[in-house]
Length: 85
Image (cartoon, rainbow, N blue to C red; front, side):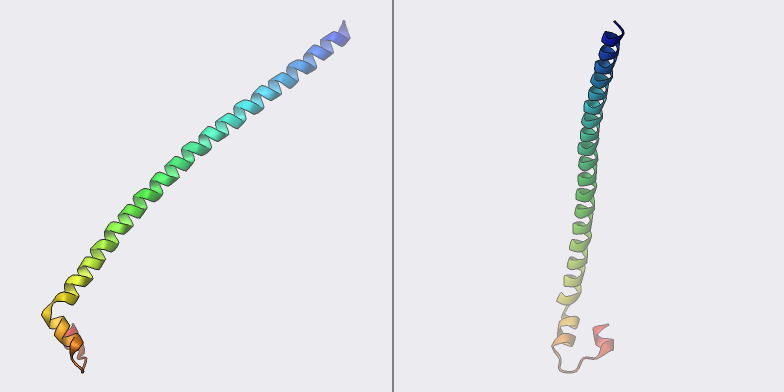
């Protein structure tokens, strides 16, 4: 009788350990997926922001270069710093 009780108790403990392991694995997997989605979302937001800012910088530089005064200063043989400014 006592031997059966020990066997049942051992099986119960093993079953509980297996259940806890499965639940723990599933929760980690779900947490990992959620964390990965959040990180990817943040990376996308930062990437879009950076692309917007770089686009703005590029357009600003092109606007400066396109002006006639800057073009003539850049095309002249002598580069006068005050003309370029």
